[in-house]
Length: 214
Image 1 (cartoon, rainbow, N blue to C red):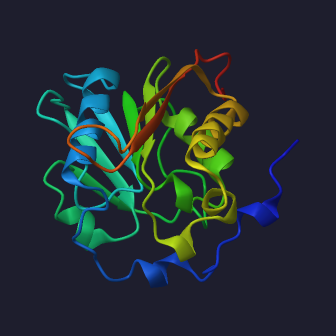
Image 2: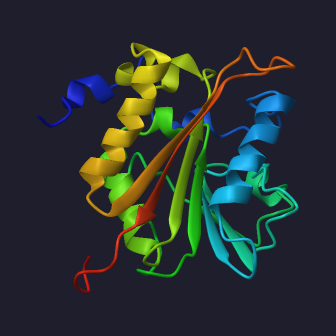
């Protein structure tokens, strides 16, 4: 059954450019969670000479030193934040909630990541499908999240879900996008030592192209 569009509304459905017009030079997860996300990247993303896409990018990408990409392209809403990100080689301002299609040619990226922002997507399946379009066959898409959020900008389906349900929801986004395979999940709860924000991730790999549009 398709996701009811009503479940993808937010308390604040005003244009996202208004909310993100001012840069926020703050991290949205604690140091322990940042370290965990770096570990996920290190084991999931290609480590050398890759072209990576940072979807819904900000002023930090949290790529660990083990990842040495040829280039990282940031796509987000606040130019000042992205221009302060030392790991980005290119900045693209684009509102995915207004236009889910990414402004890139097909099959050009070796990997993509969406970090602690999936809860804000109002057209998640369309966005996931288009990330698949721009990835090369076999390339990973790493979607990670915690339990923090700007509550008024997160979709209702997310705010009303438990943390395990959110993992299942992101899996559903991958499945319904129709362009990914070999999915795996990662969960590290707040009970770790030392305590840190919980981290969850779902990783899918771009399936082989079946035709030029695939």
